[in-house]
Length: 263
Image (cartoon, rainbow, N blue to C red; front, side, top):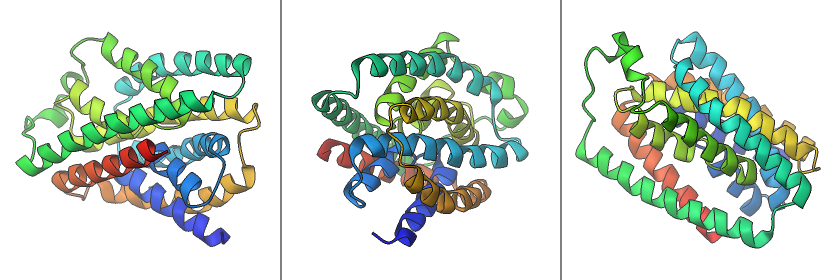
């Protein structure tokens, strides 16, 4: 496969991540496996570090625009980082995950993504979600979950899934954050999802690197495309109609679900 095709794939996924917060593992891992013939264990490990670097660029851009709700990011990391560390310890002791376990996990996750996609498409078809007009001025209330433990527990679940499959931080993250923080505007939800995924995927990716599950040459080619892509995506995010973003997100989730079930 020509190198430029990998660079283009990296750019496309980076652009989608910047616009929606989705696309890291849910799109890149299936692309690497099905279109480029990369072995699954290498696809997962390489994609984790790809997501870490790509979303770092997006986070810096979003931070300059003051869109990142750091309080939410901290709560999510409080659960996701310890869970990722524990999962890595288990992987080191047991070796690479069993193919049957991986297949079961990705199939179950694929079904969950399809159901989430249907729910989000329904919301998009019904029209724009009504938000309080003063929500930007009252971020303290908008960033407060129904219970403080919910973001931590969600972070722990995602930390485990991402470490095992590289999928979950973006695809499921945006949808669940919408439920946990219903008053928060979509651009800030996407910003939170991108920002908290950086330390999570970096920790998980470095852990996989110690297992020999990272193709460094492939990673470099992907990043050549993804960094410009996510920069452009985050610049366009604030100018994209929220209904369009929700519709796009539902399509991406459905695509990821079908690929995961087929996997």
